[in-house]
Length: 263
Image 1 (cartoon, one colour):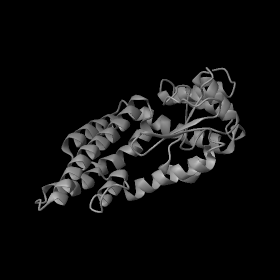
Image 2: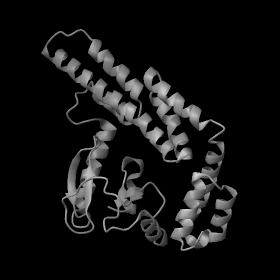
Image 3: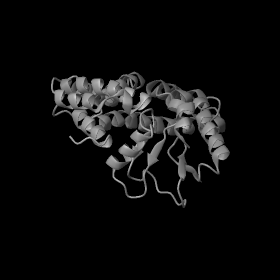
């Protein structure tokens, strides 16, 4: 599993690289930056996101579309098996679970695309349909289960945006919030939660933070795509000074440290 895999599978695959030899996140960032491994859709951490029983380095754990562990081992020796498992999960995401009946497959496709309200509405119609036999009863039970599951997924999507805000990733949260709002339109409780996040992101208090982060994202993009030569340390230092006391400035200081420049 590599940056190439992330580039190939795009939004259908989330890769988290975990440093497991006791180094700090600052050391991890410095290591990744010098090798051009930062940026893109992958993430780095110095904490184990999931427990792995695999021995040796590198090793991986693959989670399915529901977050359940389905495969683990060495990504080099298991490359073909890993890619096949990833493609199978992407197929489920695009077409719906293999054990879902034809009536539920389009509902799950909408749910996996983030169209939560539409999926719940369609499932509710199946649930409300008069039962004329055992098959209809089974379908209604499956629809009820799907509604509960999709509501949980919708709540998790809103909560994710909230966590991004708490983590100071305001621009990313703002971009994601728009899609989430579309997907939960009509789900009143979640709409209220999303509206509270929208209000906070639109506040005068966060205006400097949003402006600073958007500016930093441009600098980071050049840094990650073109290398350290494309972004002089002086430019990062100037940015940090201009946007002092923002989370983006703190992030710039960490990048300076990764470049070996003392703040």
